[in-house]
Length: 174
Image 1 (tube, rainbow, N blue to C red):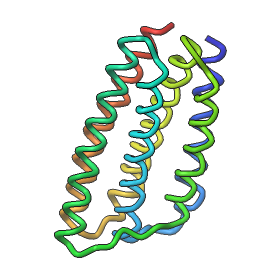
Image 2 (image 1 turned 180 degrees about the vertical axis):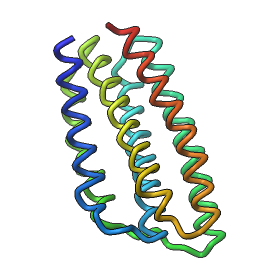
Image 3 (image 1 turned 135 degrees about the vertical axis):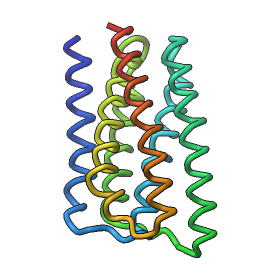
C-alpha cells in the first residue's frame, strides 16, 4: 500500500509539474496538437513497457487498451492536422511531459512483479487524472479550431474512462 501511494504521488508530481509549469501562457492550436499527441505517445510507450514486464492479466489487458485507444486517437489527430494544414509545434509543455515520462519509465523499468504492476497502474491513474484536468482547464478552452476542440472533447471522454479503468485495476491489485 505504501509503495502504491508513493508511486502515485511521484507520478502526479511529475505530470503536474510538466503540464502546469509551462502552461501558464495560453497555447496555440499547433502547440495543443503537439501536447495532445505527445501525451498519447507517452502513454503508448509506458503501456508497451507494461506489456513486456507484467504477468498480471488485468494489467496486461489494461495496457493493451491504452496502446489501442491512444494509437487510434493519435491517428485521428494526425489526420485532422493534415486536413487543417497545421504543423504541430513542439513547446515547453510537450518537452516537460516527455522528460517526466522518460524518468518515470526508467523508474518503472527497475521494478518487477507486483511492485511493477502496482506502480504502473498508480502512474496511469495519476497521469490520466492530470491530463484530463489539463484538457478540461487549458487545452479545450484554448483551442480555436472547432474540429480540434471536438477531437479534444472526444479524447477527454475516452481518457476519463481510462482513468476509471485504471482506478478499478488499482483497487483489484490491493
